[in-house]
Image (cartoon, rainbow, N blue to C red):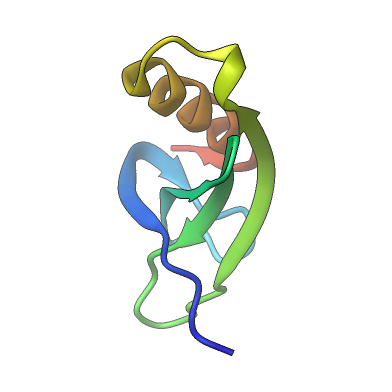
Length: 81
């Protein structure tokens, strides 16, 4: 199976809830929606990727709005610094 291609941006001010390493917001485009992932960016632990939720294309009017909602989903699953 090919690897999942996810666009990832580091989430400043938040940490992985498993290892307290850096965490990022991952978004994978799907037909009709985007899958949102919490991505551990720690070089030492590498907890991996965890699916956090899905955002329907019809629920947002612009990709900026999708990115904001994705970030909020990951913030809810991460630890604030």
